[in-house]
Image (cartoon, rainbow, N blue to C red; front, top):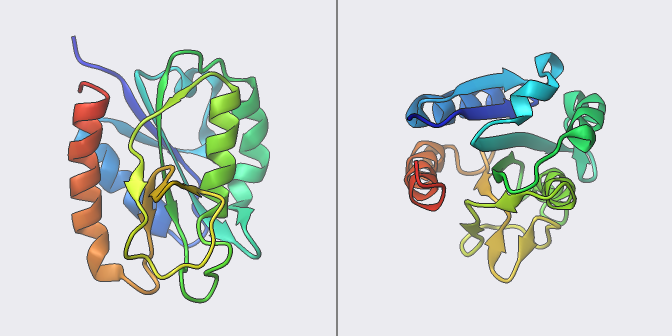
Length: 166
């Protein structure tokens, strides 16, 4: 039986949407913008949430309304992976804080986070999405490291296949 994989994302400039589409394609899942998501979309075997970080560490605008939907989701026992986009140089002290906020929320909803990503080599100085040398999910920086995105997504999807038994 194939597993249901849903990538829910918020995107202002199209970069997060592009990453979500790549991830969904590589894992055989579907990508849903949080603006169009329903409660049923959160009931996947592997739920992947993606956001960019804006301003001084805030969630992407569409997630501001989508948080209510996330807060009502029963994620008990579900595997959830996260990915975030940000500017590690220009906003190095709030890099991927929005992904950290989503991680906090899914843990309080009972989820098991999979897909933690090593933070070594990133140019940031601080992040609420980082603990013990790992980000809570895949870290992408299209502003400073656009050439790394495709390879990072490929490696992360392989990691998710193992960790989520896909």
